Every structure is written in structure tokens, then in C-alpha cells.
View (cartoon, rainbow, N blue to C red):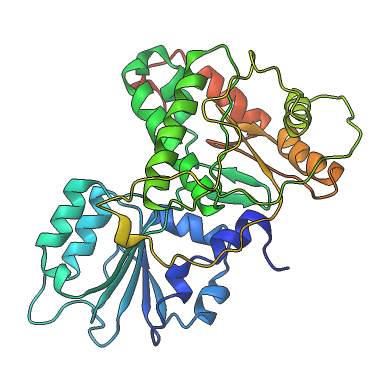
Length: 348
């Protein structure tokens, strides 16, 4: 069965089909391998003309006659391994490099790439912003089960702000992949939900500075279905959200609910040339509701996203996700670590 929804969107990434290469090598690290394997089979990858798929952190035989596509997370370890491929003499490991980072490359690593010998053979260098896993057609995961511990364990209070920033960046990449610039609301109460919401808005504003057309208004359909009230609670929240009946005091907006097409944004000086001519994913005509649950999402909550979508007869598409997918055992394991020190537990 062909992938649909989020899996299809991620599967259309230009890193495999947008370079027009003849039989290139595909090099990935563990995070990018998880992203690609969540929506593609190895046969799909090879069908795109890839000669061989390699792990950047493993020893590889040089193939100086072929160009290489690198799909990497922008971490110190992966960037150093990339630079090392083009450090040897008399020939490099590969003929040329087409580099696709799954997220924004930190400035120090970006500068180091520019100073290395690799800079002479780079033919493509882009950030495609895919820092999430398309778990199902309407379900995503940030692949960060450890974030529950970092956010809620008193011994990790110093990591809390950094963890929220990381999660916000990942959520923002989901929105940009879907070509959405959504109005953002959060459940009033714990301050971490407000902080995460504001952080997501800041990340989206940075992306919109580079791509002013992000989230331009499309045709909005009026929902005409009857609500069914039952648990889980998140289903009631979804239904109220698509009907615009959420209490605005309990669920305040961080960003305006209706951005206009005429809004202007400054062009990014650093990344403007990296994001032109992105892969052509057709924007959905109707509205989307994207729900993020802190601390993990349960199967019943995932099912609610499909049920509410069906109830609107497809006029709305509801997506739900979290740092990780919860099972009863996983939920209990998360809870029992929150009063323990990091050295006493084994995080996933």
C-alpha cells in the first residue's frame, strides 16, 4: 500500500529525487535513517537510482567515481564524519557531495564546513527540516522519549529550557513540511505549555522570514457535523477546536488565529539561498488542526485524530503527535523515573 498523509509528504523529500544524479551513494546517520525508514522501504530508495546506502559512522570503502547524497542530522559527530570523507589524499571518498541536513545547522558547524576541503566539492547544501518521524498518516513522533524525564524530573531542572527549545524546533519543522503557519494555542495551567507554545511561534517566525509564503491562507471549509462527546478528553478538545468553541481563557492564543496572505516578512540573510525551489508538496486546500501532547501520546488519543477527521468528512485534517508514543508499560516506566537521578536510570 502506498504511504499516505505525513508518510507521503516526508517520502517526497527532494534529497532522493531532486538532484538528478546517476547512481549516487546515499549516506545517512542514525536519526536520518529512522526518519527515512519510517516512510520508505529500501526498495523505494533503490528505485530512485541509489547505488548503495551507507552509515556515515561506519567504515566505508572509497568510491571516488560516484557522487554522494548525505542525509544527516546537523550534529557535531555527523558533521565531523562528513568532513572526514573529504580530508584524505590523493582522492576523496566520493567524487562530490550533495548535503541535506534534517534541521538547521548550527553556525559553528556551518562555518567549519566552509573552511574544510569539502567546500570545494559540494554541489548541493540544503536544510530540509524533517526533525520528526511520520508514525502514521495522521500521527507524528519527535522520537524523544527522554524528554519526559528532562521536563519533569526535579534533578533535571537545568535541562528543562533547552529541552523545550529542542521540541519547539522539531514541531516547527513539522509545520513547515506541511506548509502550515498555524495559529497556536496552549492549555492554560503549567507554565511549560505556554513556554513551548511561545518557543514554537518564535521558530516558525524564523522560518517564515526565509519563506514568506509559508502558511498563506487557503480555502477554509465550514464544518457541518454532529459532535459526539466521549473520552479521551483530547477528542473533545479536537472537536471544540474545529468548531472554534474552545474557551479562549483556558486555551489562549500565542499567535493570531488568521494570518493574512499580505503579511510581509524579512528575508533571512543566512538561509535564504538554501530553501529555494523546495520539493513540490501540494498544499492541502482545507484547514488542519495539529495537536501536540507533552509527555507522550496514547493509542486512544491517536485514534481520536482519525475519528474527528472522518466526522468532518475530510473538511478538516487532524494531526496529533508527541515526543514519543505511549503504551501502558512505557507510561509507567516514564513515571517511575521522575524521582530518580540520571546516573541511576537508563534513558531510551
